[in-house]
Length: 288
Length: 294
Image (cartoon, rainbow over all chains, first blue to last red; front, side, top):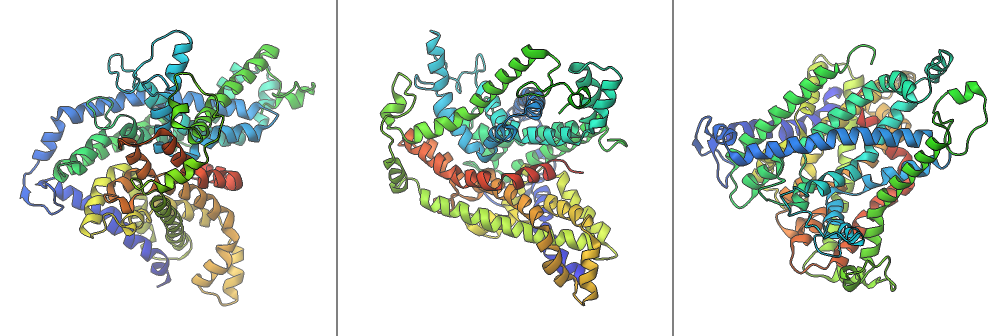
């Protein structure tokens, strides 16, 4: 049967490495499982109750929420602004597009190291503190100051640098799909170029792209791990859900029961939020 | 691009298309662009500066714009540092990047072609079972996947790094959509000549789809090379560290010098800078194709 010759290997792998882990994890979330992947003692819903009343887990969800409130709107506005700028420039457009897209070549680890050791280094030789020094201001311990929470500045800017170019490319593709006749019609009808055209032609035409950017961005923010792990580590502040789950399930005590329960709670939250967001924006609505 | 310039027929101001805000707006946009370019290139400047500096240059109280004597010896210092297996890590990353990308494209393209072209009673159900995995947020699955991989005994092995990442429902989905739009006439001509699905796929479909493969390959390779969480989970022994894990461990090591670490950063992004230099067209296609799911 040639269908299975083509699809079989993939489906087999998917069963072993996607479906089986989820099922196994679901089973394990009802058991006590310290340093083992075999279910040992059945505890019912206790792992879930523990996680939902765990102050650290709840505060990690709070950390995520603060992060999303900053990163999602900033990414949306700035990547759209870059796309509009690059799209309107006549000289060296490819150069500008490449410059903004280039950070995509860097990993979160690389960017975190630059941010932590060179830009936001708390000692005097960090670039940010050097610049503050030029203005006579005192240096700041960027990553360890909790009050005021300066650590958000490196955390948010590192992700902006890494991902703006990616979303800019999506917006540029969206802009280029808009039919020029719409702009011609608007011009003939006397619409003022600038804000009016942007508000009534460009933005509505970018609807599908905008929804995709918002959803992709929010899902990515939920799964933030790399930069938090490398910039902050396992502290009581600036710790998003994945860093916390990583530490309880793969840290010194491998508590895979609670880890599984936490991962499944997080998965359900992400799916609900994604569905709500799609519903609100009417993803897939006719005419998009 | 505004269309007004075409209908109005006025001469173009330099640089931007006809600006509604006049000269002030145009200057403002150039300033915004210039500031953005500086900010975006700043981290790259820091990589080059720090990688080629002495430690004293970096930690000096006054900012050194660029090292007077470029320290190319930092490269050999990095690769001779016994505390960090950088050469091994580069090798591991290369194997993971190449095999991971090739394997994922092979499996997903065949699955996508089968789903798009080969009639089968339950094809719909299989397709839904694949798409359903897209609903599960990828990063949340690291604990479940670790459970399976560790019971297979694959922790700290290249197998463990590569094989679980090969089965991308999203890639299979993209290939299916792409093959649905592939010109059927090409395939039918070959089938008349007696080729089976296998022959048609390898001799007609794949050779005529190379730009699509290149686009997905570029983006998959970058994703594999830069991935961190899964290699961190699996790489419990330093012999199986990828470059990303090695660099991350580097920071927490007490002995680390900043110049050495930045040389590691420079070395680690080199392969990707090459991809950007030569395959950027495919890369941008890949982003556009995989970024929007429709």
